[in-house]
Image (cartoon, protein in one colour):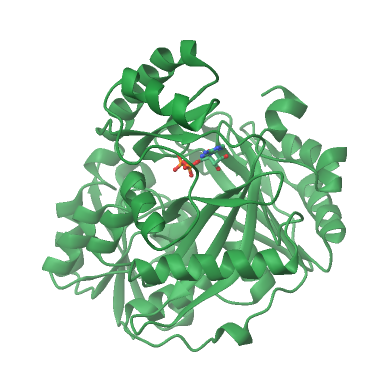
Length: 439
Ligand code: ADP
């Protein structure tokens, strides 16, 4: 096992990793920006090094400063968390070149997956169903129109480098193509510095269902059930649950085995997630693979009893997976609500719920200033119950207990979702929030 690792992240995920390292007797060094100097993660790590100003480009994305800090502080590995450099192949390669272990898959695997169009090709080659679409990149709106005619409208024009729901536009007919193509392309250029585009058929009212996998460096790959992340706003996840109310046991097994096949085809190791959209008939299609730990990983932890961060670190250290597929099972039901700040500001009073089956992952404390520089997520509230209904009731009760004074948050919105009839019945898809709440 590692003696010391560097954490190249902030907020709740940095704390989550630090706590896990403590349990494993691994020392932690955290890098931080001036905006985070009074943060919990900085206080909790064994050592903290300021690497730049608030602007992420000059701190959390400053690859050389992070590598240099890792070397100078005697770290053997770097945990990137999620976001920032977690799916940056160039950074993973720099770690490799400097004899630092990147806690994630190899740079080569990241580059084959991070480009969605190339990941799609790889999936086609290994027989994983993908959404019908273009065979490769699409250079012009005219070409896009051509492909749309072939696969049939409606279509979704997507950026190969896309993420966080950015760089995608729907087109329902030929008239929409130019505008959809050009706006998606320029959004991608601005957000990712890469405007490679491809096209998929727009699946109508799909569920977003993803499979968590774990794979070691010796070819052992397992799946840990699914997460249903269909509750989204602007293609961004808001509430996730496991298991999905939509899948039956056989579908779960088939999708799990497909995800394992996809991971094996990529020579994948580390924790990872294979994302699918599932249509009303239950057909599932690969959309992308995330080669990092995800925000919603706790719901899988709650139902499987497996600490995913711990496994991710063990795998990176070259240890064998000591869980076989037949030893895994999904117990009860877990839900996660992402609590986001609507505005920056100082937390004047804070109270989080607690109790049986309630888990909070947050970096907030009284007096903490929610800065405008980073992601607006300030807490994750996770509950675990025997059944879906029990988990929903527990979540409502937990949310009702939350007090975050000083800023506005989406706590009440989560309560409205959980009280919604369609949500209760489990009959929802990715258009749920826009249909039910007009957002
Ligand atoms: P990102 O990396 O930006 O999150 P994804 O490819 O994972 O992009 O897609 C984000 C969301 O967009 C999905 O969860 C789903 O709701 C929607 N989506 C993506 N592809 C399709 C598709 N072909 N048809 C319908 N919805 C889609």
